[in-house]
Amino acid sequence: MIKSKDKKKNDLLLGAVLLLTATVLFLGRYFFREEGRAVQIMVADQEFGSFSLSEDREILVGEGNILCISDGAAFMKWADCPDQLCVHQGKISRKGETIACLPNRVTVRVTGGTSSGTDSIAG
Ligand SMILES: [Zn+2]
Picture 1 (cartoon, helix red, strand yellow):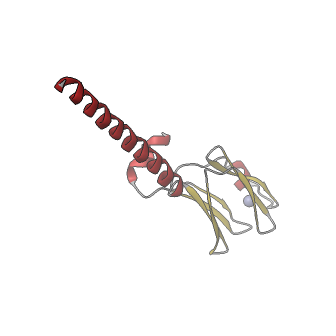
Picture 2: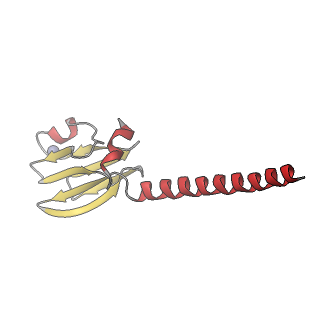
């Protein structure tokens, strides 16, 4: 009798632990997404905006550049600059990486999450 009662108590405890774990995981994912990597776009030393790398999109920056965000990376899809160096810089996804379009004075920089430990996840 006592044993089965204990077992029931353990089941309840286990259920509570699982629920707690699920909640923590859910919240963790939620916060990770909120604070995840993003790109900050600067135009002529002024902030154009910050965009999350977790949402695929195309951003028209001014009139001369189109930045594309796809699969957690950002790249300059199109530019009207003569050198096209920004387009050839390829994809950036790691914190601190930049794409610069000097003729158009556009700079795209990857900003990381808040904790330094997140860097190894994408590695
Ligand atoms: Zn360029």
